[in-house]
Image (cartoon, rainbow, N blue to C red; front, top):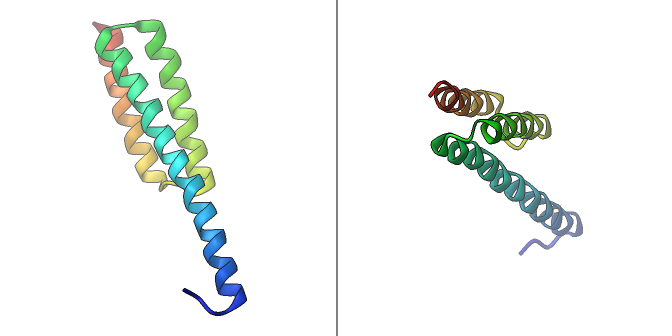
Length: 89
């Protein structure tokens, strides 16, 4: 455990930040999963709506610094590919 007052405060701050980041990452997984599930079921309206939401949330996560921009681009590309396959079928 840290001895300095500022170090203790840093630990508290980091823990709060980690909780927020973990929450955002978990929600991102949920949004991406919604797109994949809707695509596998072939629900076109649900696919379109969940795709837009997932892309928006991935962009917000990048803006907040939770994930890297290339990771967001890769995830968006993959779910868009899955969505397009579902919409064509």
